[in-house]
Length: 208
Ligand SMILES: [Zn+2]
Image (cartoon, rainbow, N blue to C red; front, side, top):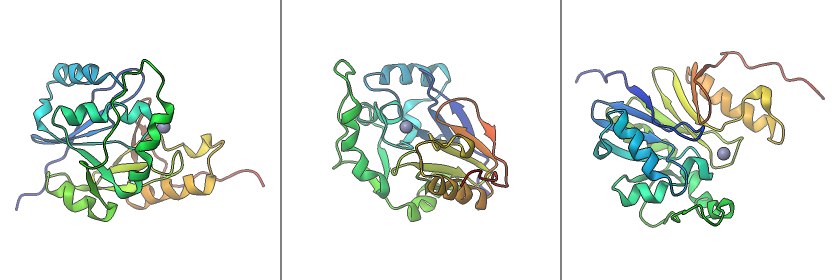
């Protein structure tokens, strides 16, 4: 069997939020899923970047906040299955609390998603020709997950940078980053802002 090709990464984000398309040939996964009522902007960016929407096998939200998963149901209705980690299931209905009138939000139904434990994510991705896995990386929210590629990249959503921790539990945040470090991750594709280098050694924590 041929070794898996190196996946390609394209950003189809808008409104200061990154939506990443990871592709192995014509098998693609979309990481983070657009703002409520704004699936059209995402589809327009896909088209502009030359990504056929029919080739997106799954949409994955790094976590269920409206800027990352607000258009998830609209994408499902357009034929993009929603891949949900077991740790995320409880968070889906909670998203409605952040929705404001006029957001044109379509509530995400929970009976028709592809729900898998993180332990099965490697096999699922291998079926797409993508070498990697999806890890539970809480810290910003308890439903946060990261897509890791074996080439040393991770898509971390809003996982708080260790130096920026304020309201979060620093031990939970550090555990998530160290999980990624342990797997050899050195390049971070965040939910907002440009990709950056992850220092392989964790920062020294200050304070009491
Ligand atoms: Zn968030």
